[in-house]
Image (tube, rainbow, N blue to C red; front, side, top):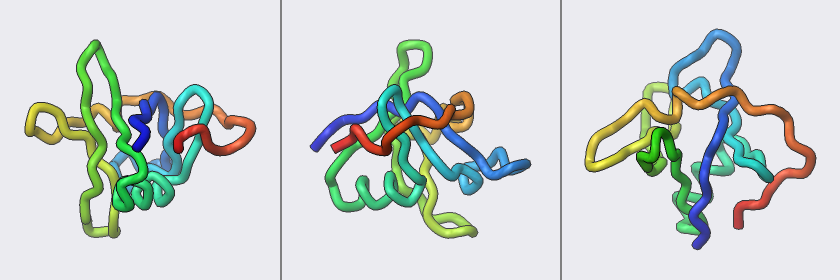
Length: 97
């Protein structure tokens, strides 16, 4: 299992909520939300956000629009994922295992 840091996200225009996230990325990879959800559920990867030296792990959550991702740190839901900047397009697709 690979532990993967998320450094940016893309959202649907005008949707700043968790269910509006379409893509997540790091320095050498960019995946759709569904790819990240499937990878977490299959136990292939763990994903996390590191903000201000504080780690928050991504978890799959069921919401009104279906499955989406949230961050959790120290047993509490956080908004760290929503605070990430917008992704720039990356060449290639995946560095996460």
